Amino acid sequence: MKNSIIKISSLLLMVIVMYSCSKDSDSEIEAIEPPIEVSTDPSLGVISPLTGPQKTEVTINGSNFGTDISKVTVFFNEKEAIVESVTDTKIVTEVPTRAFTGTIKVFIDDTELIGPEFTYVISGRRVSTFAGGLEGMNDGVGLSAKFRRPKHGVFDDEGNLYVTDSENYRIRKITPHKVVSTFSGGTRGFEDGDATTAKYEYPTGITIDNDGNLYVTDASKHAIRKITPEGIVTTLAGNGSEGDADGTGEDAQFYWPQDIAFRNGLLYVADMNNNSIRKVTLNGEVTTLAGGNQGDSDGQGINAQFKVPHGIATDAQGNIYVADTGNDKIKKVTPQGLVTTIAGTIAGYEDGVSTQARFNNPTDIIIDDMGTLFIVDRYNYKIRSMSSDGTVTTIAGLGIGDVDGLTTQAKFRYPNGIVQDTEGIIYVMDSENHKIKTIKEE
Image 1 (tube, rainbow, N blue to C red):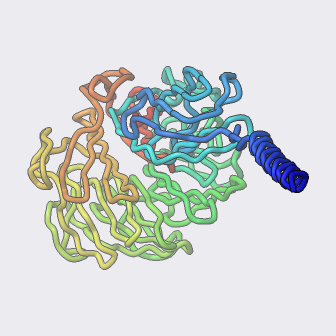
Image 2: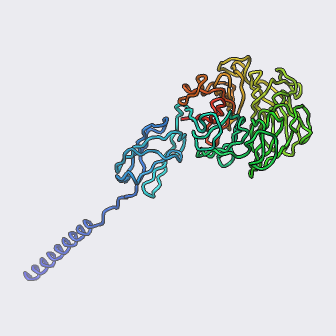
Image 3: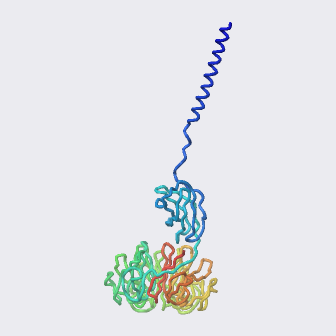
């Protein structure tokens, strides 16, 4: 009996020991489970601020950026920014000039991180000389090029600017890199031909069609000239003699046509000394859309009156906007020929709404995609804008002179023409300074 009790006790002891060992083994297994992996990929956190003007310092928080500044690139709306400093968890950068509103992107080596939208605040505008210097004739780059009273300009699809260099009797081409060359003309006269043999008497207005053909108002020869992309020049309408006649080709007559615009397969001409707006097909058929007698009257077609209109522009709906120079007004002409005054009154200088505003010899006009008009106010030496609600403001020009800088300090000398590129930069033909100047929002 005693032996049986000892055996049972021994058996229980063995079970207890085995159970205890099993628990210890489980504990050891739990203790050696692998740790949770922590990502080493870079990631974005809070970015601040998300609005501001150029040169705003922006802090980009996150993780795993590294510390090598050469491997970090930041973009605001696809424009590369300056990276000031980098730690593994923070990037400090600066908003580039003219970035405008768009997405923040960060690249760490080849890893792209997409951030939120940054709202760009425009702090002002700046005027700079793009090309030209002293009066004369010289092809070259930027300031080394020379013009003699440039009048108007137009861009092609590749960003090249074509300028009527009126008293050099040439059409000049300026690349986006400021390389200036002679595209057509050279000797004063009136002759069709290729780029080197063609002659102009006094080229002023210029426009371009969908196929890259240029059209030029050869003002003192009262004609519309066509230039193909290959540089072949022909006379589309007019015959070299002043007059006022509708017709096709040589049968049509103009009297100092000043400017020209293209829209929806048609050309529109500010026929200055005929005080009218003419419509020209690409086959050279000319009709009078509005005006014909000197005066200042709104109305339909030939019942309307203009006084030496110079500048002309069109919008996407086919409306025509006219710088009615001698009346110091801006007028709108519908495709059906209905003329109304939308800005200006007597000569002077005053910002304001619609007919409360005053101009002094406006010579050119353009319209942007938002419906804002930009106007060359020649004898006020200023560039004006008119919003879609009719509010006229001054965007550049302090007075007569030749000064680059902030638009409140910049000066022009009898500016004549204006054009805008696809980035919204305005180019001014600063005629009596013999320069092409830009106005950029910053």
